[in-house]
Length: 316
Ligand code: CP
Ligand code: NVA
Image 1 (tube, rainbow, N blue to C red):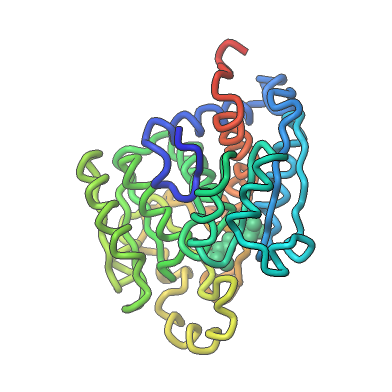
Image 2: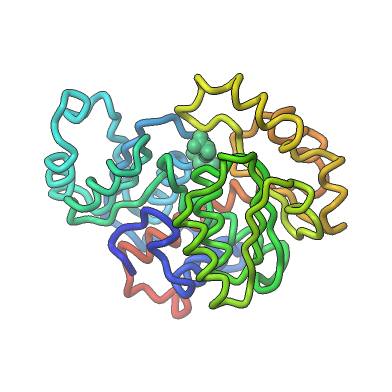
């Protein structure tokens, strides 16, 4: 396992499956010792959040506490970082006290610097480019509802952002066909597309990048989207709404093209009436609350793999 998880790129197909496997074990209520046993007793997780978060921060804190460890919320403005101490020196210092760090940052490069100068594992809690923990939860959710990963098709409609980049990588690593539809100029990163195409070839699946949302959603098993206005893009709101609407909204009309038993996913927070209508996100095909719950289980699994790699949950 890599020391750091900055994107889905840092995890092999086998490691992703292993995280999902452990998360499923922990989630299963029959394994009563699974979810709250102190497997990580004494471990301390530092959390730096430059941007707001509901799911990521609280599920990480809950995860480490339920596994017997502790969390310290390193409020950005209370760190010397906010007064100009370098990321390098901050990383070196935090490594002396903590066992692991989760960080949500504006610029992915800052996270790379933080991880390069830390001796402890660094987990990306979202950057402008990637959101690996969300995608692990998405893959777990897909498996939960579809009972398989190979040979099924996911359609992402909207902004080719951090979610889209890691989703593309995660799906192609697991043999899920992935179709991405964005307005021209809002496609995911080029090198991510190329890496995903290579991965999908190895795994017998395909990648399609299109500007046509109908083509993307056609015969899809999973339809997903994300906000048009990611954190930090607020000043582009009017421009983006005009570009994305109405074509890239997931609504009754667009969804008619998906398979009858499609599931709808969204990382949340959602803007009803923008990227998705309430009929869809609050409708019978939506699995967004399972997706949000699974954040807790996959993050427990990830922390166990990083902080207690010898732990064998099957003998537990
Ligand atoms: N999906 C997600 O990461 O949510 P938060 O921004 O609330 O953490
Ligand atoms: N793309 C969104 C995801 C939020 C979880 C953002 O970056 O704000």
